[in-house]
Length: 74
Image (tube, rainbow, N blue to C red; front, top):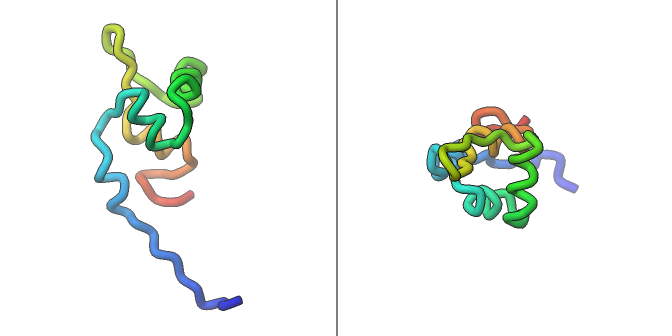
């Protein structure tokens, strides 16, 4: 195995996402079902914002959920 392997971390990946995502959009990014994403938002594991009947997921909360800070690996 090559010990000199380097992995490129794309810091621009988080900039491609909108500031807030709908639950279906967040579910697609997280590669989970829409129902599971609603459940994560409801129980507080995935930070969300409720505006009227809409539930929005801030871009930053996606990275927080994945254990990343500002789009960089933890």
